Image (cartoon, rainbow, N blue to C red):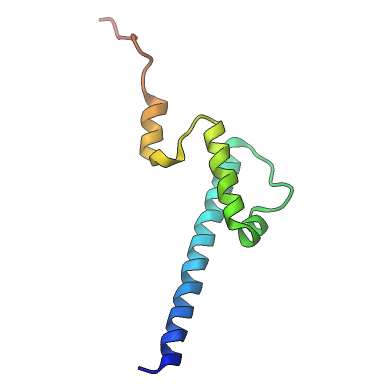
Length: 93
């Protein structure tokens, strides 16, 4: 196999994976903003994720933590925490 073909294949793979990560992160940012009614400022989500992906992800993580959610638990883990009944509360029949 020719070295230039190998380099071309890896380059296309890196670009494709970068675009996928960007699009998922951008969509997640839009969902967080719409769920909590956050303004899209000082820059748009697209610009923030395009030029400073790590900063944008850290900001989203902090926002979720400040609102009482733990992003490391994932969706199902947070649903169990949010949906757990208060301690000592029982249904009387």
